[in-house]
Image (cartoon, rainbow, N blue to C red; front, side):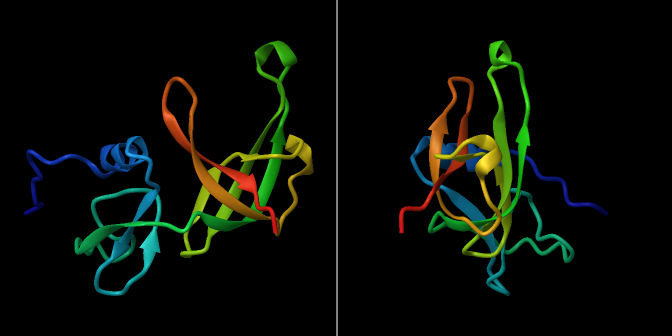
Length: 129
């Protein structure tokens, strides 16, 4: 019979609560030490529930990048990238600090929290070596 979870804050809400506190945390499997992202109640593939939240370094490398075109009156072009975090998982977000179509695969980046007015989100800035 499936386990029914009651009176618990879901993992996505916990993630955004950490962002509200100025921390970028992702989950890690306590048994294997493997990190994963997107927040969930069980470890992908095994269903293990021995999970913990860990603050990340914020360092990553652009794994994939695309420029999404929009009319200027609709906000203009924006970048959408997949960043491989130093801890292992990938995170989809925007890379800032370069023209949206000039973000290159392999670029080192650093995460930060941005307040869009609607919701907090993680974005990446090009690392200054």
